[in-house]
Amino acid sequence: MEIPFELEKKYPTCSADVIILNELDEILLTKRGVEPYKGFWILPGGHIKEEQPIEAAKREVYEEIGVEIHIDKLYGVYTSTGKDPRGARVTVIYVAHIIAGSLQETIEVIESKFFSKDNIPIDIGFHHANIIRDFFEHSEGQPIL
Image 1: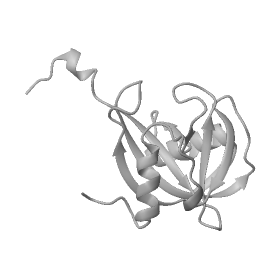
Image 2: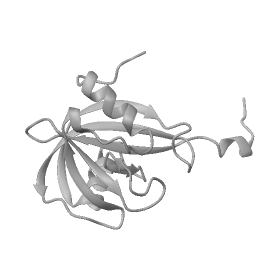
Image 3: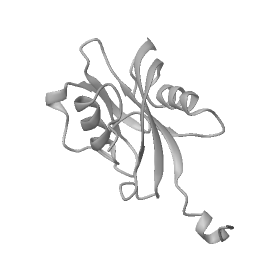
């Protein structure tokens, strides 16, 4: 079956986001400096370009906060339907840790901070609150419903 071109435009785009943990198993969140969700906390990451999702995750983290990461595992795959004003997005989520560099601010990220499970802020952007909740309840991998 052929899909009309105007409907093809409605397919979601793809992104790669990262749950970065420190030695205390706290999770790194970044505060957005740009819209959408300016001033909200999110997981670091962003758009997948012409690259593998794992490479996009590493690149986006480095561009946004200036650190190199080691990807420990694939956590899961989520959709942001209804949570991103730019349109639907399929997000590949990885778990990682920092191996080099120090956290920095950029235009996109005005603050980065590690949070414990009991100290997660309430102002979380996009669909990341669901991902963070899932991770703290099911750290082995995304729960299958």
